[in-house]
Image 1 (cartoon, rainbow, N blue to C red):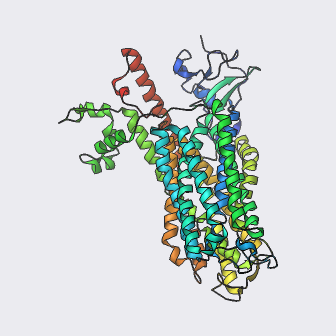
Image 2: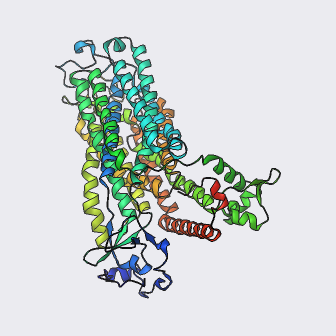
Image 3: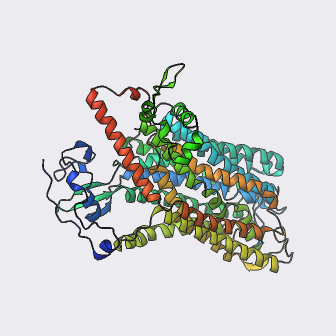
Length: 624
């Protein structure tokens, strides 16, 4: 088959030419493109207009054809509903923990369930009365465990039991955790505060384990449903050629997934009113009912899913490669920029090293692509580190923010209701970005690259902490108790609705910073380490929680305003440093993709030439 005729191509406009987005040579290296090479075709979709499947675009097509989002299967939306149910139950539980642990039950509480007396509009629900520091410590413990355990859950999903079974185990542990929260909220447990606290800790640990199995596996499973590994050209019935843009498709899926998280988080409003109007037993019972939705959806969607089986354990292979990398004069290689090439088998054999361990004659059981995969994984982690600070600015000190609103005039509104403006903002803003801002930027050929989105999100989120500093300062100045307002019986004469600015700004920052990080965690990770790399990103939240635990002694009057200011300035500084460090991230990603494709094609050609499996394939490769 010869080169197909180019039909109805989108012509470049003047702005593309002036900005260098369009190559005036028009050749663009297309003369080297082999239309007969089967490697250039994907057979995931075949019809009368695309009889050989969808083809990888030429350089000229990349510059000129219209880009659209690929087909999204309905099964991905059902997986988003599963995430909605899991996050709805999780946030509905965590949203009431601070009041449950910190505040003491009112002696006039109806039925002894923790609800405040009906006649006091500014009172908050309470149960154990353990204070702000204990509440902050335990809520951060939940966050820490919920984001450390995904390392194990992601590893199990990638290498042993598979993502699907890992999710099933997570569902079981999560259900048990919700049961323990209900046990901790009965009147007897509230009356004996130490016993109630013990049940609460057990519930926190169990729920964290469930989260650790679900979180790192659900999003990779969802993104696995998109079949194409690269951009591809599709011919429409009209004859027009379009490019199915993989990055934009995964971005759309990630945004829908993140939207489902925040729709679920918004439902915690129900539990806030349950604790205030009835008590904590109902407030903990509602999340369990929401949680039960998840296994129902998983049962429905399983027959429609593309479930990749787990590969063999990759960790021993990773350890071998790292041991080679750090052998010899590795500092000199780092300085010269040849650190990673040293462990590539092609270079090892070139310098006469035929064995991994010469004494035992242990063979080299990896290929060059393995080294690229590990390099790419560690490079991804560099940008993740900045999220330790971002998470602190993004309501990472939630107990302090809840305490701030509790020291303001509530007018009958639960003090922990206001953090629901975080999911409300995301629910409103993500559709505006997806269907308004991003298409507008594309129309004018403005590239809002990943590092731009992340840095902008950091800056917006840092402003939320500056707003917190201003409000906390005002509370101190106007409270009847002065700079000891957190434990004051009388609120400051400031409406708590002003505190919504903290949650709105933080949520807006998430829409750029978090969704982009989710996307990078998937696209920049090897095929057989996607759950683990995503878990590494989630681990940053655990580090944030640990840091928050470390500064817990400072979370008390009269210094709370300085805590807000310090975190806000740190977040802004991280945005600037990160933007400088990763300015060329898009170029690095393009080079990684090109190198990966080249190594894959070379290995396939070698296998075909020898008509046998390549020896290294006897050991499971990271390559899927």
